Image (cartoon, rainbow, N blue to C red; front, side, top):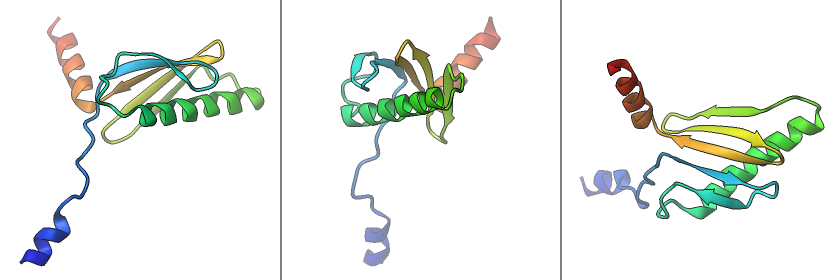
Length: 106
């Protein structure tokens, strides 16, 4: 039984995903953020660099791409291009349902 319990144990704690936004410049450097400091900066940088790479590749292919939306099971990333930089929103499913519920009450 000890073999099974050790097999299902996670060696790394799960990362808590936060709702918030951040802006990046054309090089992928973070300018401002509303995401708590406990969220890893490396992960924010890698998200920002992937978004900027996508916007740059779309521009090189002469595609008009002003907004990018990526859905993951536990995270939604929405990015808007801003004159060489980008503004990126991170939302979780819990924050989306809370927002929809508040709108329906109005």
